[in-house]
Image (cartoon, helix red, strand yellow):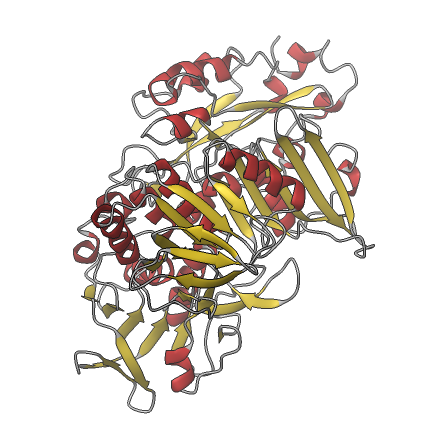
Length: 445
Length: 148
């Protein structure tokens, strides 16, 4: 068999690893337009602020390709697919034959169309190369002021990193809160305070009108006529699945590449995984692009298993699952966590300690947990996420859900597909006088 | 593969396992000792909760730094001792269904060049018997060799 994987990040690399684990002989080739060995996109801000060197971004070791007997073709973009010949046509002119192909081509940043985008000093913040260019520009031009467009994860990570490097940063966000896709108003305000304590400024409810300057950026205009002086602009206004390659090869695409439960496209020999596909979100029931590291890794693994013919269904994915810590405050959001007053079917249980900056919110419907936000205290967040993911009935525990002693112990018979770690409990343990008689119950004479 | 196994009716809730666990991991935790085994309670009955060192562990898939790995020989799932370093992104905390991974002191991340760490059971690699197993006076916790 000849396996070809286009994409060298979470989905592609994990797929390659799973393919090799199960199949020692087949040829596995990884193609990527980026020249770097597999690195974690989520960590580029920690490179920007100097806490990590590029080495620290590699999520596999330097010997990974060799150890797994993979053929890396890095820095060579795939231009098109010839589905009838079953070949990938590379920018080098090479035609790469495949028996099974995986598209793990990720997503790409999008920019609002405003005047001034041709000026120098404007960057995306998506790749390791973007980060290298920003670092060089900051150094060469001695950047003192920067504007970040978009207060999603990427924008705030960039803003935080630039602030740490001593640059005065202004973030412009068109929504009324930061992290609008992931967090509710209360939690976003707590996170905003934490960020602003570093000295960066966040402007909400305003859009970018233009970027201004002679040949390099000198300022931006927001709204009608507010100018902000800056010599660096970072666009972090969202990403879109890379569907061009699939589109031109007449594979089905919508918001992302369309795949079935086996992560197969409408061509039985072509699979797709990671940020380039759209998934049905188990929490909302809506089809939407999948754009989290965790989902991409799992999809890469499932795609590999199915390329090997193992028929493993990938379902129940939760689209929104984020953990974040920009400065001092940790926060996690999972599933449906933003409920409007019109959503009468939902029940919300929340707890907010303003002084300690701890805010927890659970969203329920039909006795099932559907979503959660934990801010300032993320202990056991994964346990709640599992209750959401596995659709476990919590009606017996409704009064306890946010109590400090609510834990996995109540569900110890639920093994989540793993080997159990509890022996059967003798009935004496349930007795009301258990503690008085416990030595007997423990079997101690 | 080595795993911890629990007989909860023997547990008196003394939390000596938690103390032994904190003591054993002082070098990683720095300022604030943290336990990786949790004596929870159900209706006033103590119930320890431990890491299962899962097969296809979700914390491993969730880790964006690549530091959370399952050792092919021992089966131990840990984010310590690898070339890739934990950066305190907490994806593993979000992924673990048992809720047995915790963040180290948050302040450390903001004030230093180093990162806060996700703390979890490593089955005490420096010891033959994990600290919690040795510390338990009632033989609640047992280290078993099981097939995965």
